[in-house]
Length: 447
Image (cartoon, rainbow, N blue to C red):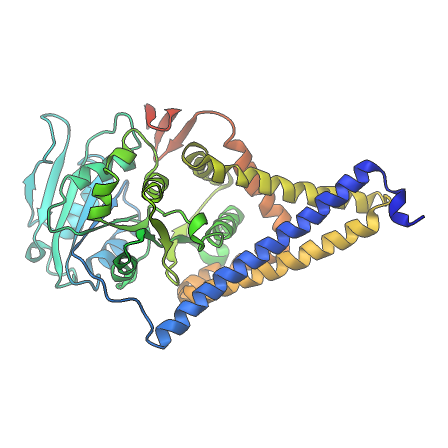
């Protein structure tokens, strides 16, 4: 009788779990490799001059902002200097006493006109400041093709996230000349060709939304906290799941859509009463049979700094977005991380206790470790292919954790995913929300 016949039924089940765990690790390796190939192919095509047509409809860029980030001026300057034929910028804040409103107003200078939002009501706290290009402070570089800069205070949100409320308010200022609408986060680092690259794919009628995902960078480089490094790894593991249309979802910090598409999906209806912009836009566009397209070789630098409490709060909030608006995608996170951790700890215990399955447990641990190691190397190569030297230097401290300590950061990822099962309240930007339904959000506290 073979040695395998000596295993009990529970041990056979355990062997099956380990086999699936190895398959999961192989899938992760292949997925990152395919993402890397896509990024490299884009670079080769650009070197050969094989690029998309230069599609440059007149654009409006909407940037919701809260608080005065130390790098806000730098990020604003990047937007002002976009190399694009015709565009305008709309910065949207909560109130005119918000630190962001004051910082942007002071940065652009005093040559502005004051008006109200078209749909404003008396006493609702809304204001619109408008700068013609010649009115912007002379010491600020700006593109000669910049048509207009506007800064609004949108007033307090009532039954939707403040960010979503600000974006909807900003859309009131769009005019007939705005053919493409681009949404951007104020803390994302944009190159001067960002606007051209994010809009260009929209020349294809089948593409509803073009997006570029963020790549989190430790703000203080290798000296950043362990929580920050782990956050960057988890984020990169999610980014490299993108690429294939059926798995793509727009990221709200860098996404472009044609005005005609917004009219087709009856925007802003998909955002009313919600706390999410990007998933709801993706869902609405896909419901019309159009694609969510991830622009290759265009990861957006996003410097971050986390403590453990802020990381767990951020992670839970991200999974709450998916739980409410993409439940089929959301459940993959808890299941995948649970499988990984069960496989790891069961194999480790089997090996430590020298059970009858210990040789297979040892093989499984070595196989998964090897696959994880090379997956981490491929992920590092993605960063080297797509990000600039400064970004790569900031990432220098994370790769050892990605390649050698996957069980540790997978445990952190699991805690974030599992925590999203519980509760209906979360805090975002100092505001606490309660979820009653996907389009029924209550604000219960402001700090």
